[in-house]
Length: 368
Image 1 (cartoon, helix red, strand yellow):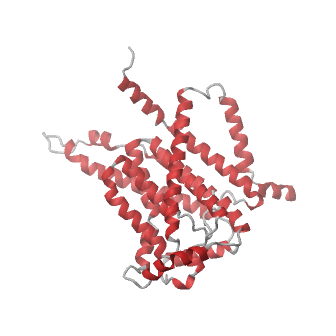
Image 2 (cartoon, helix red, strand yellow):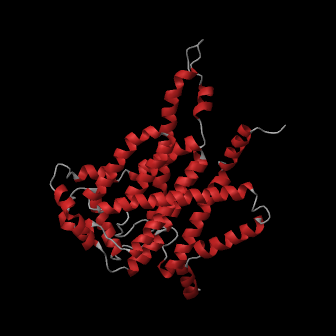
Image 3 (tube, helix red, strand yellow):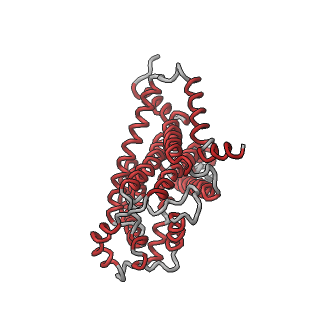
């Protein structure tokens, strides 16, 4: 018996949210951009594995797991009254579990792929560190100096408060990943991950074209950050940019424009609003707080945040088109005739572009 329209839409939704098909565009994006950036960097390419990179990836996975656990716990608390057995007045655990249970591991794959994709942009950072010697901070500082002068020593000048806000950006983004996965399925989660990767690469390209170090690096004496983690981190970034810390795949160098903190927060807030419009009452104030923290701590100029929002919007648009294009190809079984050749080409691409970087090839020729 032929399926009606509702049945077909349900099947199409399950197909588009299936693990491999939903994750494929993100995997190809990470592979393609990572290999391209590594090829461009050449001998400057970042080592494949560093302790800093491993700590970052494990931290992302750990925060995601904690948020996923809390989400299930909250959902169980909300749903528990609806699963009380009238006879025993006890919660029926099996129906409750069937209601709240979900598979967090596919979402974890999105987090890991996104972390790998975002950190692979560090190869462009190495190009920036090796070649950029002129920054455009003087123009931006002169333009926004009245704002910094107004904020300095005002009631808003609370570095330790803004420090706590600033370093919660990734927690907010990962929270949105969890809720998006539970609400929209793996497809929406993968689009968010691909958007983040594209945002990282777009910002790195803009950094190379129009280098801006940031207010705290241009006028360090203006900002009083004693006792903050921002002060420690900015010192490490200065050392890294100057070449006193080796490449590790995590540090961003003095690259202020546009602001990824503001851009990724705006991206996550927009994704939340697509699923729950009322969350704008919470996410927009949070976005403003993140934006303010980047300015108050000297990480960014105000214009950096504005451009960051624009870049994040472009990244979401491109990621959505990429996923839509992949869905179109899958529905028409465009790759059925070429599984072997595609697999062989992908493996060759991975080996030449990722597993055997230029620095290793150079070493093997010298030592071998």
